[in-house]
Length: 381
Image (cartoon, rainbow, N blue to C red):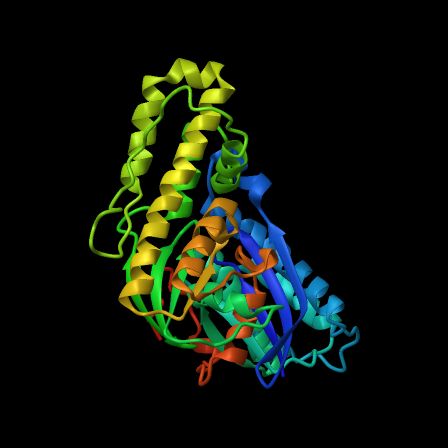
């Protein structure tokens, strides 16, 4: 079975083709178009601009992905004008996207695809609509089954791409990204219970916002980590809070950390402007605060639920300090730890395409009923 994955939840446009045989996943292509340089001047993702870029790139990526997977074939036996008219009507609010889809459908033959999996949430609604509309058009015109996918589940499933992971349950899942920080009890593939989550800012969001306060630009997590690794001293004796680290719950709160950085940087504004050493030390303290809080909560969760495995996913899972800390915990607890390969830590369509292959009984939906849900929860079905 070959599955097409489509991902447009935030600022990365993703198209992927996978082949699955008895739950073994082969990634045929995984095309991603990043918008980092476009949003950098804003210090974060600007939704209207992100939507425009998705519309600009998604069909180009579809061609690229199909070509790499050797599924792109030129030449159409006949154009179904009635179907095209219906697609046009459905996409009346996205005429730019429809024009690109129309050209594509008139140029290339239907590929040998069995299902289309598309992210419907959570995420930025203007961005989600681009992927959803593209999936609707292709599903209807090609008459291919359509599967709505929860983006958060994708970050957990990403661990199964290009590597063998033993299925051990119960497991604890950690989703840590720009928009989400959650601890999940996993009783089986597709069986999730959120047992801890952020009450305000996500970890990645906190890193982005504190990076902006230090004038580091976007994406903040990467900038903070790079600067922190250069710190060689502690001459400024910076000490930031570890919010909720001693709280009995498994929940997080990172807004207080962001506020503490704001007050600290205001107090020492001249040092920020003049001293690279100060920014390096501040970046190191920010990173350590985030990692310590996450690690403490994960340690508690593993003990509380007698977990046999720890599964980590999301963009912040690429952070070296976090990886080192979680490896230490897993080693001490004697449990299996799995991270996604670096190519699948951030938002990508391969993790979206893999879900219908690995999770049993994923429901399909009529193309006419498909719509995004920007506030979708992991447990929502």
